[in-house]
Amino acid sequence: MIRHARVLPVLLLAPLLLTACGSEKAGDPRPSGSGSAAAPAAAPDTGELASRAQAMGVAPELVYVTEAPGFTLAQQSVGVLGDEGFSATWVDGDTHALLRLAVDRGTITAGTCPEQPVGDLSDEHTTCERDGDAWYRTGAGRHEYALPEEEHVVRVSAETDTVPRDVLRAAALAAHRPDAAETERLLPSAEPAPATPVERGDLPPFGDGAPDNHVGEGG
Image 1: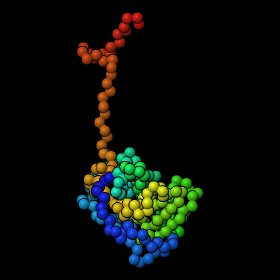
Image 2: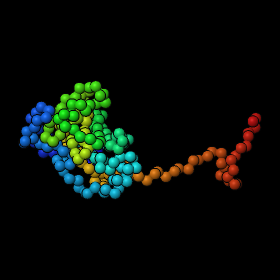
Image 3: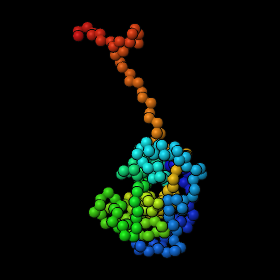
Image 4: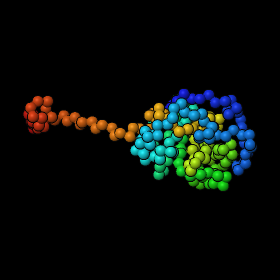
């Protein structure tokens, strides 16, 4: 996990009164990638974040991080999404359930929500429910919280039968821009790894180091 999980208020994890797509109650909690989550302990190191993200081909402003109890970042999953988006996956150490964070350019509205697939199959039916400022979406055996931000959408998704909705919602609430320490753990270094000399078994440890082409007895 990137950080110790925050303890969310019980109210945020209580069952919500959800309305149909396109409607909401004024008193509903407001899941949001930036406004609802607590501020990081340290300010983001924008220079280091930018250099690491750009080295991967990711737009720095699309890099987010999240957290959920029992889930740990799968480092090999961190990468570019589409042209310059960002994607990473967290794994539950006990159940091996996967929690995916994806951030990309675009918008989502009451009109476009049903047209955007939750899974990888574009012909699957998608249902949408308004949950504060976010959309709770289901389709193709998956469910997702989609959080509209400025010119991009933060999505936290999982398989419906492996990650409960309250866990998914809590992870969506926890999504935020990484601070310096989180950037260090989340993104690979922008510096290329040092080249490792290739060991040649035919170079003798003495003399001028010329290859040993001696042919043994019998050819």
